Amino acid sequence: MKKLLLACLLLGAGRVAGQPSPRQLYPGLFEAVQLGHVYPDGKTFVDATPLAAPAAIERDYQAERARPGFDLKAFAAAHFRAPGAVGGAYRSDVAAGIRRHLDTLWTVLERRPDDAAGAVAGSSLVPLPHPYLVPGGRFREVYYWDSYFTMLGLQESHRTALMRHMLDNFAYLIGRYGFVPNGNRTYYLTRSQPPFFAAMVALLAQTEGDSVLRRYQGPMLREYRYWMAHAAAVPAGRAQGPVVRLPGGAVLNRYWDASTEPREESYAEDVAAQRLSPQPAAQFYRNVRAAAASGWDFSSRWFGPAGTLGAIQTTDLVPVDLNCLLYRTEQLLARSYELQANAPRAREFRALAARRRQALLQYCWSPRLGWFVDYNWRLGRPSAHQTLAAVFPLAFGLATAPQARQVAAGLRTKFLRPGGLVTTLAATHQQWDAPNAWAPLQWLAIEGLARYGHRDLARTVAQRWTALNVRVFAQTGKLLEKYNVVDTKLTAGGGEYPLQDGFGWTNGVLLKLLNQYPAAPAPTPGP
Image (cartoon, rainbow, N blue to C red):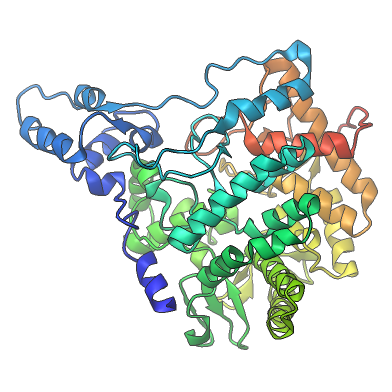
């Protein structure tokens, strides 16, 4: 069964369960459109709706492309309907206040169940059977790890039914593919994202009780098997797929993508970047895709000593955040078996969680830095990059109290800025680096600090972050996907696309923090 699952994952970019991706549907045309920059954003074409059967479009292209005066842009416009931005027509009522805006956005960002029977042939959308929320802007589909932070807001809004629908959609995707894809698009079917499914189950269980753990035990277990496929067969000091076996025999995980081709949604960017990289093309594309699987696309966190995208080494790293999430999954699987009075299986997963924690503390804690870092399994040494991924062991309870104290001290002295916590200490023009900050990492830092008793610092971070969010909303009528927390008068930058508004995870975290830290005075400038 495991061999069959792995074989399915390795079939190629997007061709899963009979759903080819746009590049596979439109060979030649796809490359011409993307490399010709027919659309300013490469994601536009892969999200476009074909106006005829793919085979007919491809025949038309082959027949017309050699004719004098052929206009590729006009051809694309005649054969595809370009998508619009989610919420593009929505205008907020700033005078009504931030809470009214947040409540309205759930409706703006909600999508009804997709009609699988009536799906347009050639569309990249993977239909989902239940309602769901999308982030907004160019992100017109559900995204895996975004959804956990969106659900924080749904919980505060008492929209429990929608939380359950989103979990059911992810359970459906796990049942169909064996894992939760990056998003419900065919071009995302070769990779997952940070595995928050078990954490989502725990979130819903806060409202509906432990029966939720039993209800979703099967999907949790199947997703866990995706991450651990062939673990027993991986030799010490080697890696296979998402599994890494360290020299001492401990098993941890890395981010992974089954494809070694350029990302279809960023095809031109990847092709151009690869030309500047000394890595073989397949290695470079796999590393870029694995970074996309991490959600941190892109950050100096993944770069080698050269500090550039061309030196990206994502698959060489054992990421601290990923392994904390899998630790949480192991814990919740153990709890689900305890609820079934299945003591042997509960002990098995408790032991797996304990071994993962021991390995993570051994390999990912840097006494020199007083910080949790990623571990380069290929070089046999910890990364030198300090990032906000270090808050995951606090948020999920893996850290010791002394370690948490050192992380808290580092957050206060190195990462705290007027608008919250900066993502890394490096300013590289990559979007997951300074001066940018993101709602999910603020939330996990606040939760982790509070969990270990550093409540004053948790409150400070929360108040600075919410004050920045609210101020930008008052000025623009928008909530954004990321913020500049160093110079709060400027917007965040970097990345392969313009700054997006919507924005699911910002909304969810902001509402949670406004309720949890209601008396927020004006933030104090400076660290």
